[in-house]
Image (spheres, protein in one colour):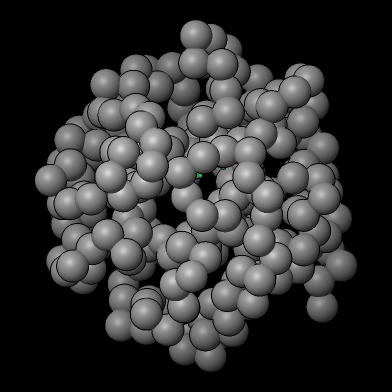
Length: 224
Ligand code: DX5
Ligand code: ZN
């Protein structure tokens, strides 16, 4: 099932609840929250207090994408703040199996993320335990970057491995997803589509979300 995960990074933070409501009205069904620490990525964003406020403001599942070093130190806090899904970068985890199990122990869905330069093969030993895999289609740190088409083959590979081995993870894609790229990511096999600027950048978030989802669903019907 195709789902749209609006990324609040591109929203107007002074009117966050309103913006989220509009994106949800347009069909957004998962709220993507980018957590950056200024170390793992060259940018700073938000922490557990904002997640806690969003928990009160929306019924959408909260998908916390941790772009931070030492994620183990913060997983409990994000879970307590109301995160439903927590993903960590393969590149940030020295003990990836332990970190993913820690997320599960806090009753959240556990996701693993790979940067554009990180091969799918580095996930071989955790694909059986993750709930979702997030393929970065830009280098993380900023919204509004250009989609990197060379990442598409990793989405295809993850879909193939899942079918061959009978795994249950879902495939999420993040970065530069918009009207011009959404068909390609869906045809490659992505199911959870993160979009920041394409939803909140300009115009009406509800209409933008509707248009993006319609394009995604029609591409998924064309899939063979
Ligand atoms: C980038 C973030 C993305 C970002 C995507 O590091 O992980 O979630 O918000 O923004 P767009 O959709 O504008 O590329
Ligand atoms: Zn993200």
